[in-house]
Length: 380
Image (cartoon, rainbow, N blue to C red; front, side, top):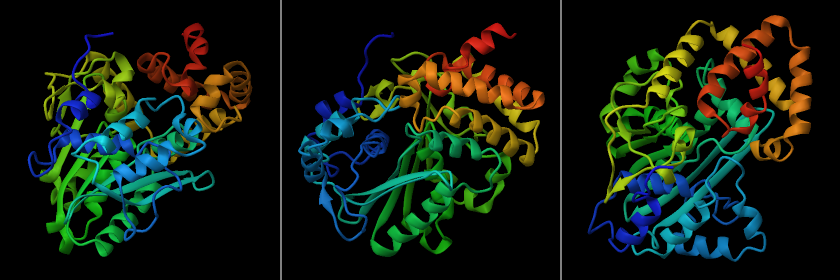
């Protein structure tokens, strides 16, 4: 573990007394709001844009729920400090009167979709829309991989509709933000804003979100918002290294090692800014090259076929979340290996090749991959 540095919690403690009038909304604020949306606030915030409560009221409702402890278990992939971040933000002068509305959370196993968004009103005519990243669900990961061949995944379609609804219902300016897949949705959402409404889009934040295939960056919808996009990636970057990125981002120094740097609580701050790192970790560069080289050798059809067979193995575990796989490694692992044995030799080869690429970088952090570690180590 690296030396402890100033993090999101410290920011709220040290700078939480400054209003947005005293210190303007910044990238650290955007990351905090992106992280808060990971909390299980189902049923505590209206789905409508015109029914708002303050962040302080939301925290109060959240903490006083009978199932509070259950809500705090967000699985193997989300930092357990996330509910505490909501509590600290709600207590601070900076965020307590921020209003929230339009909480939408969709998990659709059939459509292979995981989408979640929340709108914050930070000032009279300024709104921040935060998109939740990939949560602990297997379906969320499946949908991420589908970015590899689908021109538009279901969550992106919902993003477009959500932003259109927000801009129709609320007067004022908008900032879009998201971490992980939420970062990808934030950029996609920015591209979906119609030309006539572009003057109302102030900024788009992408925190370690997967990119797009190269042709997307040539599209006029991307070019007209590219100067409003602020992208941040940790030194050891895996999720953000999936697919192509344009060279317009900042690299953040982190206090954690390896894949754990995807967690925003490990990102180092210097006051209202992120501490900059000079370059990506060498292992990230290797992953970027090998993952994208591998993805680019396949046609869309081949990628679809591979992703479907890959997840047929993961789903054979019977688990719906990484947490469930982690809790029942032997049973889930056995079922997955049995399913793997049923695939054709060609599919098995492709599966092992992909798992090798991931295990090299994820080490022991993502249960649905690490189950296959012995397979990769013993079969060179």
